[in-house]
Image 1: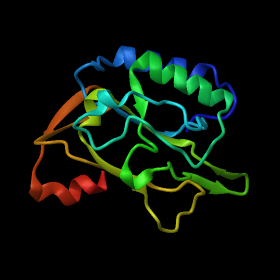
Image 2 (image 1 turned 135 degrees about the vertical axis):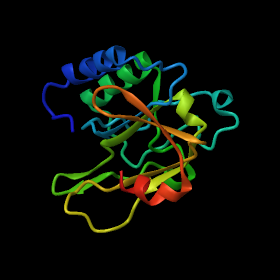
Image 3 (image 1 turned 90 degrees about the vertical axis):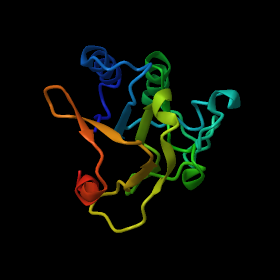
Image 4 (image 1 turned 30 degrees about the vertical axis):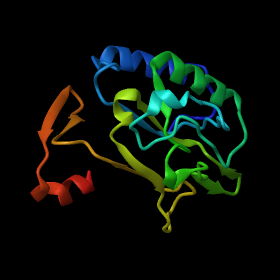
Length: 173
């Protein structure tokens, strides 16, 4: 969750954390997700040639047409970091469905940010339909990660060997 005020510092902090993490955005698969409180409308479009062989679209549509100040800063962050927004790019979420529905209205503020290395791993994404205790709706990303998964343990990265026998456990993570 990125609070609504102080919109200038949060994306700079994420840039610093990415730079300090040792993650190579050119070769490592990266997914950042959460409540960014950023509304970006239909922004973050790409050329179709960039996405040949992927199940995601270069163009994106959104049910939320608002572009707010934090959304503009999010777009700058995406461009600077070499990331893209997944919301609104898959057949299961086009146009991007509202991720928040509450007393304050409806919006697409729970965002899934990925890098190009991750794009070919995405199979589909969508809003799961079930009761929640929050106005934020669960967003599902179906992906093919091949034979291994990389996870962060808080102090560094560990590599997990995929095992079908442990798939129930992985779904709990």
